[in-house]
Structure formats: structure tokens, C-alpha cells
Image 1 (cartoon, rainbow, N blue to C red):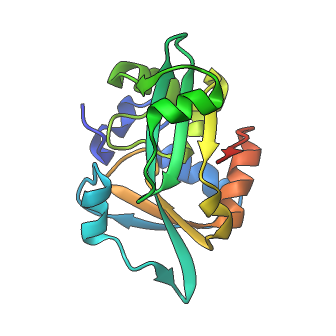
Image 2 (cartoon, rainbow, N blue to C red; image 1 turned 90 degrees about the vertical axis):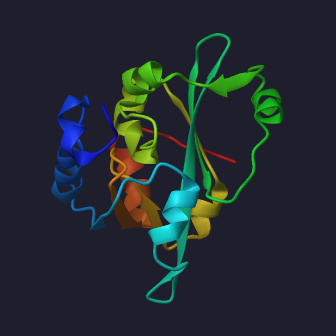
Length: 175
């Protein structure tokens, strides 16, 4: 299976269901359909500029990590930010961190590789995934992210993204 819209019915929570939840909660977004984007480099090739209507846009990258005690972490960063996993694990006092397997990614966040997104916390918050978010989000007016599949991107206002996190009881730890 791929991380594309045609395969979304195999996810615990589909992209279409997520978009319906956002609409039902009155959270606004603009939806873009495009070829699958698996990496930051892919996204840089097609995504719009860093400003939207004169407002700052945050493009992100997302890491699904695990520690030796099998605890799960989602780390959302500004797309060009560099993170040293060893230092990050030491800072969190959890030891060495590594990337989680595709199977665990699907089990704990409900997405496939290439579609990791903070919106996956709609699944992750129920599975005890610890969520870290770059404090650059607090300065952005708009955030671009995948809605659980990697052939779609949504643009949401920062306030709506934060409201979404509140609604699903996902409390980001700011880094």
C-alpha cells in the first residue's frame, strides 16, 4: 500500500474523514491535490512561496521516532531545521532515538511513510504518542501539511491548527 489518496480506505482514519472532521469543527483549510510528495525536497519542487497573502507560511517536516522502551514520538519541525537524534534523545532523557518502522507508524499514527503529519495526532493522541513541535509554528500565519496522505496538502491558519490539537487532546511540547 502507498500513502496516496486511493489507498486511504486502508487507514484507521481516512484523509476524507479527517477533512470532514475539520469542516464539522468549523476549521478552515485550503486543499491542494498534487503528485505524491515523500520528502521535503519533493515538496520544495511544487509548493508555493513562503508567503501567502503577505503572511508567513510554515512548511514542515515530521519524524516518527521510538526509544528503546518502545515509546513513540512525533516531532514536527520547520522543513529546513536540522535535528541530532542523539542530542534530542539526551535532552528528553529518553536515551537513543531511532526511526519507527512502517508497521508501528501505521499502528500508532495511522499513516504510511511519506505522509507523516501533525494531523496524525488524531490517531496518536489515543495511543500515547508524545508530540513535539517546533516553536517556529507560533510565528507562522499558515501551516502547510499533509492530511494523512501524501498526494494532498492543506493550508491552515495557525489558530485553526492549534484548535485542532485542543479538540483531539494533543498537547504539543514546544522545542
